[in-house]
Image (cartoon, rainbow, N blue to C red):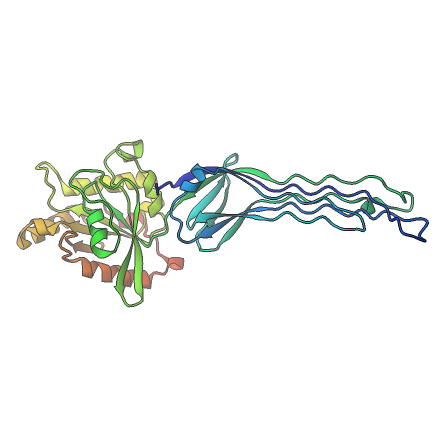
Length: 351
């Protein structure tokens, strides 16, 4: 299924049923009074977060959702039947915005969380409601009120604990393949990853976390270069970012430090809040160098970046160093539950 993370849909709640004009006609009751019932309530439209969905592709086909109208009232003071509510399934992590006003209506971050996006109309009054001491035979009734109608913008932000950052071909897809069961495409050309990938990483019995891999960034991504920065929103719910840097870039003029600063600059252009998240440095592809040379380059990169956070040297291809990385990430997540995940002060970052 094609990955779609943005969609537009129209929702229409049901209209209320019309009120009834009716009078009692019973044997031996010469002056029967009004007994028209009210119309039924129109059905409302709800969005419900459902596990197992990871794309908004369904809304590219079906874009209009309408709830059932309320039934009209009837005699004997019978209220019309209410219209059935409509529940529309969306992926967990969907943000709902009113298209016309730009108001954020809700953010469905938990399974089975429900949000009402269009309220059904009230039923019209039957003629019983209009009787009085001066109007004993009312022949008027109320029409049902129309249900709410809205155009909504849906935006999916994947819910992951850990996010991977880096240039194209930094080894993000290789790393997520090494530590999880995810199988994104891996090749020796840039932009192999075109859509985000999620992988569940197991750190021991009953201990696991979700890792997100997004397409690589390049300089100018904020202005639309490469695949742009549209996929960075999928990292906004993460608790820690792993910044992958190729310790042995193939190009002779490549500079890992310059590349790392390029990624951070694009991150800040997209969202200062995202750039302020805890970020760890992961030096990848150490298998391409001799151990002594890999250690020397790692120290040089950290020194030039003036990086004070955790640093890891790994190889996604061979798995070297990934066990320590997984265990340290798991411990960090256990110490920083999602409800109280710490956001770093941007001033703490030297680069």
